[in-house]
Image 1: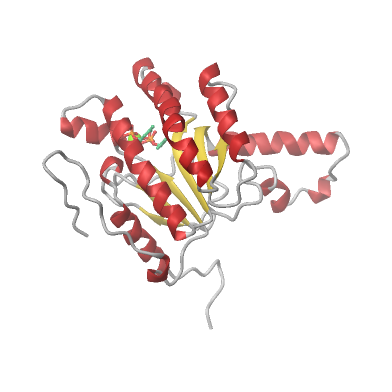
Image 2: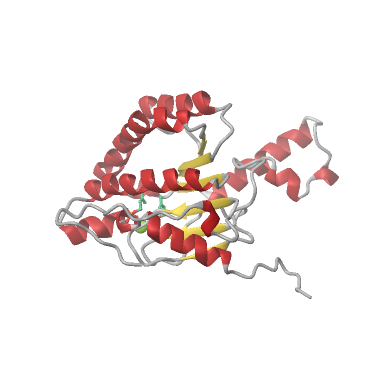
Length: 256
Ligand code: IPE
Ligand code: IPE
Ligand code: MG
């Protein structure tokens, strides 16, 4: 699909498809929003502006996901490994967390979106932590789109946390060792009660999971558009959703 941009590099509002255009939509979409750094470099801008521009994309993608009636969206915003970046870049991302919630929370709440933060919040500075806790609390009883914002998130850390909870539950007599099955693990993940990821999209052409939703992606369909996240539009998203609809999902079985 053609992406038309005006002289200022602003995205032209791409025509978004409606729910009826899709034969089958995923129940849960995961997105690894990658390529902000490369986009900024390409424009001769600092990386912070790349992340800022990435938030613009995110806003549109959340809106479209909600419009399509998809049940859950998980977005990878900051990994447990991203702390390894420079203090300046981490600082810019911390500021973006505050800015994102300040500008979006009212609309998201109004749209009945339930926000969950996937990842340990304790390591964030107090203002960020309070913002995240407040967003979760405020939207806790909403029944529309579940928006999983993955911050200080790592799939391995999530599994280790589930293992700790299981051990505690066994030790304290709430769970029998023989009851430790797949459901027992799923129930102790941040995504407890949500469907597995059906479609995982990673922009920028990188083809790896980078520690994202390891358990939940067991049978996900993967798409790796080469477009950088700041340039990803709802038209690209629709294209990915259409491609998902054409995938033959067998889950190990065989169709007659
Ligand atoms: C992804 O963009 C956003 C975060 C990791 C927060 P990058 O910053 O990884 O962009 P590239 O990979 O350097 O282009
Ligand atoms: C994954 O992207 C994390 C996020 C998008 C938040 P990275 O850019 O950090 O991953 P690697 O380093 O390329 O694997
Ligand atoms: Mg990257």
